[in-house]
Amino acid sequence: MCGICGELRFDGRPADAGVLDRMLPELEHRGPDHEGRYLSGAVALGHRRLSVIDLSAASNQPWVDEKLGLTLVFNGAIYNYKELRAELIGKGFSFVSEGDTEVVLKAYAAWGESFAGRLHGMFAIAIQDRKLQRLVLVRDRFGIKPLYYSHNRQAFRFASNTQALLATGGVDTGFDPVALHHHFTLHAVVPAPRTLLRGIRKLPPAHMMVLDDAGHHRLFPFWQLDASPMQPALDEHEWIEATRAALLKAVQRRRVIADVPVGVLLSGGLDSSLLVALLAQHGGNDLMTFSVGFEDHPDEPGNEFEFSDQIAGRYATRHHKIHIPNSEILERLPEAIDHMAEPMVGQDAIAFYLLSERVSQHAKVVQSGQGADEVFGGYFWYPQMQQAEGSDLERFRRFYFDRDHNEYMRMISKGFSDHDYTSALVAERLKAVNSDAFLNRVLHFDVTTLIVDDPVKRVDNMTMAWGLEARVPFLDHELVELAVRMPPELKLREQGKYPLKQIARGLVPDSVIDRPKAYFPVPALKFVRGRFLEFMSDLLTSRACRERGLYRESYIATLLADPEHQLTRLNGSKLWHLAALEFWLQRNVDSVG
Image (cartoon, rainbow, N blue to C red; front, side, top):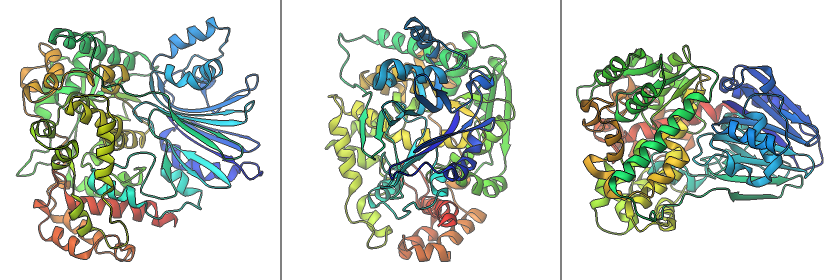
C-alpha cells in the first residue's frame, strides 16, 4: 500500500521536478518505507512505499522496464498476482522481483488495456507507455484505492489525495455546485468524477483513463456490476453455500497475500466477528485483534467491548482494547481532518484515525468488515425502503437523504445552487441498474457509488494516515457479484444480512449474531454539547466562515439552538455536517490559498 503522484505536460515543456517536491511530502504518511522518483521528458512520477508484499528493495517504485518501454507507480494489493505471474511466465515474461508490482506492469505489457479486468484486488495504477506515448490510469472496481487529478491546458497531475494536488498550486478551489448539493444530501458522498472543488476530479471506480501527450483523453469502464437475476435460480441452501465459499476465499486471499502479519479490526459486530472466526477456523493462528471504545453518553454507549471480548476470548486472539476519552477526540480532531482527502461527516472517522494510530504500532495490515451492510442489506433503512410505496426516488429519498432540497435551500446561501441535483442523480442511477428488484437496485447503487465515497474512503484515509493497510473482504468483487443477484427477501430476513448470520451460526456466539445492528459509536459527535458545541459554534461563527458566505446565518442559528435534536434520517448531527466542511476548508484549502 502506497501513495502515488505524477505529472504529464502538454505544452512542450519537460515535467517539473519541483512538482514532485511539493506532492511527495503530502503522501509520506501513506508510504513511510521508501520514496522514489522518475522523470523522463514530459512525464514525472512519484511514489511513497508501504512495504507489505516483497519487503526487499527489488519492489521499490517507480518500476521502470526499459526493454518494454514502461514505467509504473502503483498503490494497492493484487490478490491473484501469483497466478498472473505464472501465466505471464508461460507467455515468455521473466521476473526479477517476488511482489505484485512487476506483475501489474507486465500484465499491461501482455494484455494492453484489458489487463485491468484480470486484476483481483484493490488498486490505483499509473503507467507511462513510452512506445505509444501515453499515460494510463486505472482504479479498482469499488474505488477502495483513491486517485485524484487536476487537468488544464498545460498539464495533467494526479495523486492519492487532494492535499498533494493543492500543494502544487494553481488549483481552482471554487465550489462545484453539483458536488455541494450531493455533499449535504448524501451524507458527504460526492460521486466521481466530481469533488467539492472545481479544479480537482477523481477517477471513477472500475474505470481507465488514457491520455496522450497532446492532452486528449479517453475514459471508459473496464468492469460493470451485473445485477440481473441468477439463471438458473438457486434455492436458499445453495445461496448460503455459495456465499460461504466466496467469503472464505476472499478472507483467505487477504490473509496469505502479505509478507507481514495481518490483524483484524474487531468492532464486536457480526461482520468483523465473522472475519475472525473464519480466519481462526482456517489456519489463522496467533491472530491479532483490535477494538476501540469511547466515553458513554446517557443515550448511547461508547463501546461494544462486551461483544468483542467474547470473540477475542473464544478464539484466543492477541486482543488490544483501546479506550479513548472525549478530550482526545477534540484534541486530535484537527489531525484527522488534515488526513481527509475530502471532508467526511461520519462520526467514526476520528475513531478510525485514533484506532489506526494504535494498531500501526503492532501491524501493517488489517482486515475490516466494511461493506457487509451495503452488500447484504444490513442497515435499518433498507427494509423501510423496501416496504414503502412510490417511485424508486421517493422510496430512497424518504429514508436516506440528509436534507431534502427545500431544507438545502434554507441552508445554502443564494448563488450556490437552486437545482435538485441529487434527486436527478439518484433517479438516473437506480433506473440504470439491470434488476427488477427495487432493493437490489438500491444495493447496486450503494456499493458502486455511495459506499465508495463514505465508509470506503473513510477507512482508506484514516488507516493510511498511519501507514496501515486495510483490506475489505466483503468488497471482494466476486462476492459482490454473487450477493447483488440474490433475492432481496433472503438478504433482509432476520433484520438483514441473513446469509452472513447463517454462515456465522456455530462460529460466532448467538448473542453477537442476534443483537440489533449497532453503529461505530462516537457519541460526542452525535449528541453535541459542552466543549464540542463550543468548538462547532466557534467554527460556524468565525470570520473565515462568515466571509466564505456558504451558509445562511438563520440556518446555523437553528442548529445551534437545539443541536442534539437536529439529526439526519441516518442519525447524524446536522451541526457537525456544517462544522466538518468548514473545518476541512480552513485547514486544507484556506491554508494553501
